[in-house]
Image (cartoon, rainbow over all chains, first blue to last red):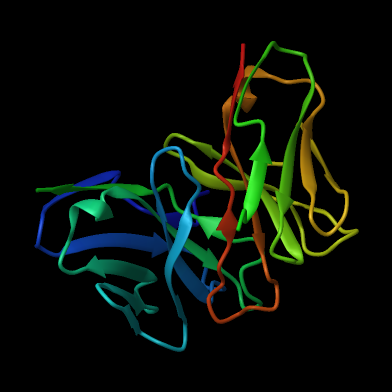
Length: 113
Length: 115
């Protein structure tokens, strides 16, 4: 039972355009949502997070949107750069922080120069 | 600044052999975790340790044991390796009190192949 779902295994975007990565979840107890980025042969690194009291969080080129009623979040990258090519994981946790984060299956983003 | 260090980076085992994956962090974090990554499955939690002296099962604990040796070190042991345990294993740590970012710090991973 996959509680956090990333339905697009891969995505290709032209350099300079917007990349939109999507994530759906089923557990209504999830209260905190994060995105991690992973390059080959490296561990995942934290990118951006959002708590359920917000519907948007921005950090430079990265913006995460949360729609609680739809149990959906998305990561927008604008403008996309070649260095953004990586696997992106969506993750969620309950009220008390990042203990027992549940991860999605990941989306491989390729930025085309 | 080493962060989270895992050893070994690569290992090939035969079915039934045992081995221990070592993990150490130098960030004085309370919580440590072991995940495995498999194609199409994302990252799945095997075991975690919320603080020194405590360990708890995650989503996929069968076939594994862990030891929180001290605040810095958290090891993962496979007592009798099976081909289904072929995977990339990641150790991670976090400051449990940091609710602002929910950030986990990951090691570089250990690629294990069981023949």
